Amino acid sequence: MLRPHFLLKLTLNLACAALLLADTSADAGRRRRRGCCDEQPSCCGTTSETSASDEEPAPAPMPAEETPYEEADAPAPTPSDEPEAPAPEEAAAENNVPPEGFTALFNGEDLTGWKGLVGNPKSRAEMTPEQLEEAQKVADASMNEHWSVQDGVIVFDGKGESLCTAKDYANFELMVDWKIEAGGDSGIYLRGSPQVQIWDTEHEPLFGAGADKGSGSLWNNQEHEKFPSVKADKPVGEWNSFHIKMIGERVQVTLNGTLVFDDIMENYWERDKPIYSTGQIELQNHGNTLNFRNIYIKELPEDATFE
Image (cartoon, rainbow, N blue to C red; front, side):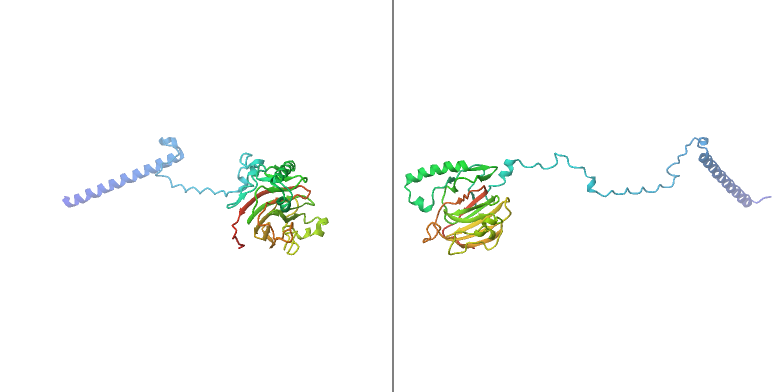
């Protein structure tokens, strides 16, 4: 007769074996089904795609290679993208605008503020008011015939007389741009007296007078220096720029940014007297085509000094 505890132990062993056999059969079935689905997807109603849980994770995508910027790849500018050249009137408007502290003697449009030349300081002083008035009418008519404004530039045709400011000046700073042609000869009269010299510094027929030494000196001096210390002219046909400072009898001339002259101005009209204390500014006629623009002045007080 079997003992109770032996029967209990046998029962437990049989139960464990049954559970182990059932689990092994289930695993085998799963393996058979997986093999069937892998080879013939239709056998178990699945497709060849596996679930996300059965797949190995896909490798991360490689970052796209960055294409370096190449200027050549940029689209060519269309005509509308390119800056347009300024119209002639716009280009002229960029000139003849005075810097701070200066007043424009030329407005870029007409000869307002200018007059024709009558005689010289000595001869004008000897005229009666009536004589001077009549002479000025004739001079103004000649001025309007030979001096004109073209595209913001004062142009002289090489005939007639000099162009003069309607106002007289004492101490001042004067800026003026000028341009001459081959063989050109001109100047700037200060207080009605000659002159800050302008000429073609490569024109051999003028070398005897000192043209090869440069523009910007007080050529009519006799007792004081008459030639510039350095030649600073730009070639004929290009614009040159004067910055002239006059206080009392002394004149400084800067040409194209270079100081070329600093000395006393003598009185050409009356050699026994000092230069006049006041007078008009003149753009000198010397029988050839001339061009002027950007004419500005700053009046200085009586006690002004050179710094």
